[in-house]
Image 1 (cartoon, one colour):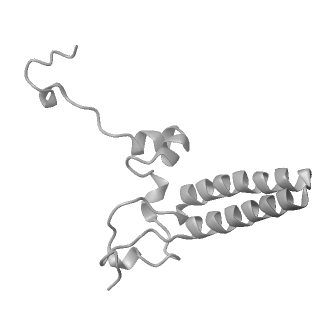
Image 2: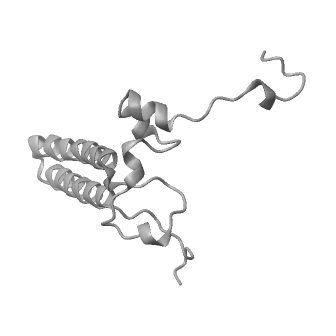
Length: 122
């Protein structure tokens, strides 16, 4: 039993790849700061930006998982997320991924019946 209980913390191919690239980029930028090599600083920071883009693209391709509880059969980091094609609910990355994913991942609209009495919409 871990300190977090019996839950999946979302270790995925997208997460591990993005973390490794960001670590390399920040370490490279740090070494470049110490050696006063300005192009290396920019290269390292550029790799950190690339890490974010690669992580996002892998998430959209199904190698990332939404937050929240998942069945134990989906806990392995090498398992692709079958629901990623349609987009994840409440996922900014999926909404930015295009109109098809934005519609699928958008929260449902609130109905007039769900408004508190006397709210009148103002």
